[in-house]
Length: 337
Image (tube, rainbow, N blue to C red; front, side):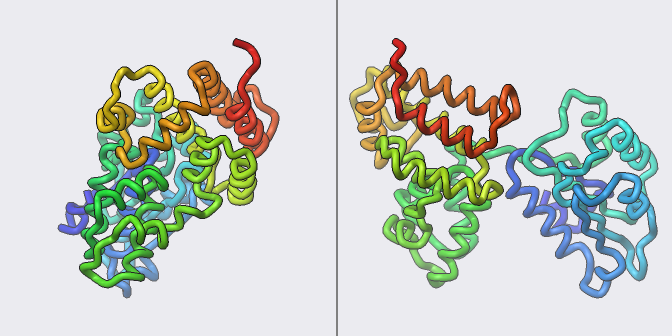
């Protein structure tokens, strides 16, 4: 899609949605910064936030004609917070606009972290009448290619072990990955090779609030550090949301479950089974000695329960309390067998 924009192949309405905000941000930023000339932006660039606008006012702006330009750009950031995009009235207003589009307007919805129900008539109309982009999280096996490719764009090369370290400790948060690689580019000249020691020094893998440091603490049954990290995460809930942490921990215990049941003895094949680099296998094997099969199965149940609570099901406590209770349960074996 960015290639089409770079070739000035524009569409009147873009609906960018999905779990991966990196691509939504990248496309939105390009449209905001490159479609209009600097002299055209004063009267022809409108950027609003979903929480602060309603559909009727937005579409009134979209219907007006550009001033001193052949086009205008109207962007709704955080469109998932737009109240009447979630109800029939607001959706119908947008459908009416799509039936009679202002061709001189580029209207962009940046609908992050979630997607409109694809089964709905509204979603099907969006698919027909707009450029509807679903931005999905990358799978673990896709991350090394992304990391290498982005490093290359920054004129850096990177060792395989450094790639896997970034993936293991940052996860599939593309915004965090690209931010850390940008920091490395500031500290190193073009053509530099990023090694594992550089990653350890500059990427900040040992920061106490890093979610993978939490995983490491849980792997080692380090109660004090686990609670410290959860406490620090609770101070910045926006940056360290609880649900992704639960997902990462669920994946961790699922890997331990596979290791407990595998008949493989070769480290390389064991690492392949749980989709990690062999460099990190020993840490997982050590964890299987601290968590036996019954406790792992119980912990997967606890994580499922926490996931439901964080989504507001049968819960009257805040996210921090949920996570604090979860950490206690994960590291303390139930007496029932």
